Each structure stands twice: as C-alpha cells, then as structure tokens.
Figure 1 (cartoon, helix red, strand yellow):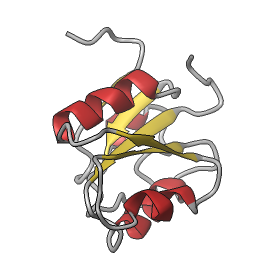
Figure 2: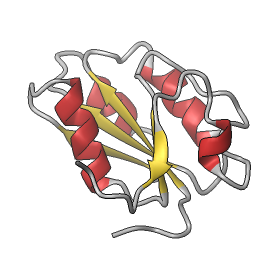
Figure 3: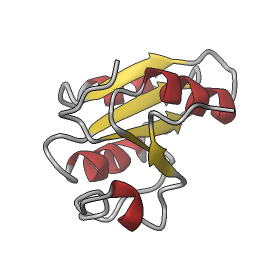
Figure 4: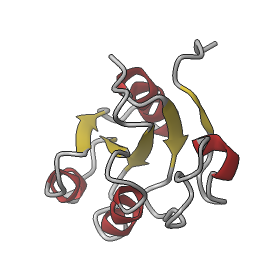
Length: 123
C-alpha cells in the first residue's frame, strides 16, 4: 500500500553496518518529515537491525536472511510505501535537500543509486 504522505521511500540495504548506518539513516530522515527509511538487514552479525530499530517510526526494519544486496533492494521495493523510491547504501549519506524539490528524482543526491515512481512495474 502506498502512503501519499510519504513521497519518498529510501531503501537502505545493510550487512554488518552498525557503525555507518546511523549516519545514513539520519541523513535520510533529515530530508523532510514525510520521507521514510526502509532498512533491509541481510542477517548482520553485529547489531545493525537494533541500531535501525532505535530510530523513530519513519524507519522500518525488514530482515533478508543472507540473500544479498540485490534481493534486499527488491524486498525494499516490494515493501515501499512512498510515491518514489530511492536507494542509499548503509555506508553513504544523502545531501540535506536531495528530496525536497517538486520531483524527488530530479535532484537525487550523488550517492542515491536510483529514484523512480513506485507505481512503475518491476521487470
């Protein structure tokens, strides 16, 4: 189900990223009050999932048991609720205004991998 109040769902796949994940999540949440973070933990052996779960309700944590970053991203796309989807790696950050334009895709940060309307079907 898409959430029209959350224009961008930012998917953050992670594996053993407890040290870098807080900066990535914080940079996503600092975009707008309506953007959402979706952390996909790929069976980390550190406390990455707990770190992500400690953030506010705009962050959801999903488990992707050792299936790799590609499957983690796909799971994130399937579970995203925003109108747009963007990807950020767990060791990256997003510029503070990258999703604030009228079209989030038009100013996606350099480190954001991809941004597209979520309504487009996946191939």
